[in-house]
Amino acid sequence: MFSDVGPLLAVVLAVVALVIFLIPTYVAFHRKVENRWLVLGINVVFGGTLVGWAAALALATRKPAVQQQAA
Image (cartoon, rainbow, N blue to C red; front, side, top):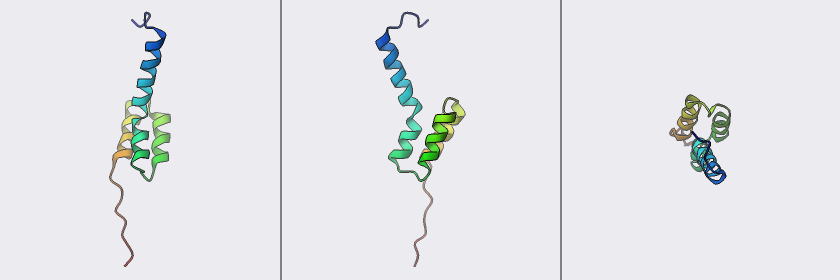
């Protein structure tokens, strides 16, 4: 199936796959999520599974906790 893929196309596909794989990490760091390093860890370790990738994305996109100001 992919035996006739050229080296340039293989590199382009690998880069695209890596970018898609790291979307949760990018979102977490861009939004400055409190647990962004946890998102990175989950994304790298479990991101190969759809469940791990979805969990990392869910952590990266959830609303931050509202902090109460001292009166």
